[in-house]
Length: 442
Image 1 (cartoon, rainbow, N blue to C red):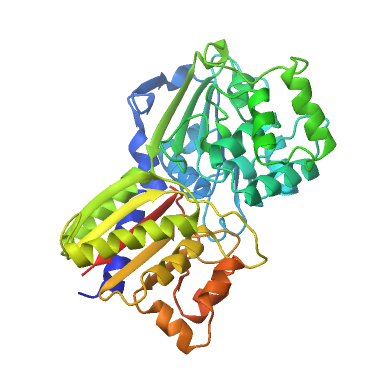
Image 2: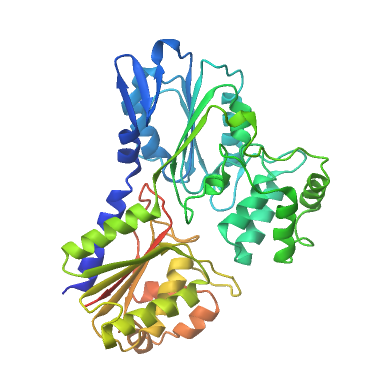
């Protein structure tokens, strides 16, 4: 078997399964003067406006599909995506297009948020707001509450990212510093109908966490956001304006985000159209086609990347040594999103750190290969989507004079994997459904 070529085949099948344009087209149709989104229909003659807000790394293909389906029925739209994600992609007329910073918000994101806020003005019961969300939207559509500034949001985001806090905790804080997140977009859109099509990048697809849940009820509170900062010893380090705002919210001096019983959700529909599980199941099917026995272990994997790598390597050794949990040729898969507690000054991302740690744990094991993939094509603040390693990677590193243990200690996976030609550089994939780990044992 050609392990590296098989990993490419499996990866491509997984990404095709979560192609955002196809997933959106499957949900939208026009027939006999009616617009259908999923199972919900509207008489086009009775609709005044159809306004679109698209945010996230998959915003461009999602908007392109909407344009194909709705054509001139679209009234106006705002699109915000990551820098370099719009070049060469024609978009429908009437859209304000922004490229903004991720994972740390920037001023272009603030401008996009202001445009979205303006788009939500003056809505009536005869209007429809179509929201298209994908991974990265929380950072790409920042709308800081007064008197917070962009610099305040940047500081909080950076501190939480470096702390290793999982996405749910990170977004519990961000929702309470925003004018749009945590159901507040739905509040602003009322009484219009709102339909949100969601490409999920969060484990388990919780509506309130994906993109910080702008059209979903928010179960978190100011008190919970405060506890998250306490848990990671960040309260003394966040800007004073952030502490003051959260403290005011804890005592009821600031309105809470809308909860499940809020009437603003009466005309809101949220549909998850793509997810990590869909990609992982497609990967398993492709592995079977390539001649492997596939086993999808979980799509709920979390934890420190380097520790998760040890578990992956242990499973691969078990297959190779004992034929458990299934005999080779085997393909073990899982999905989710690990975290990295940054202690060094290196360059990399969670998938690269996982791959580097796995290379060390797999040393000497024959006929195995591991792919750690960020499905959006960007792993951390790098141009890599992840990496492929095998049982010979650590040995090759030593022959090149590379110290992989030192690189791991300094969170410096990128240059080490680059020197080993193990990095996977795909460019923006146009989708984003968390990470995939594919383990082949021939």
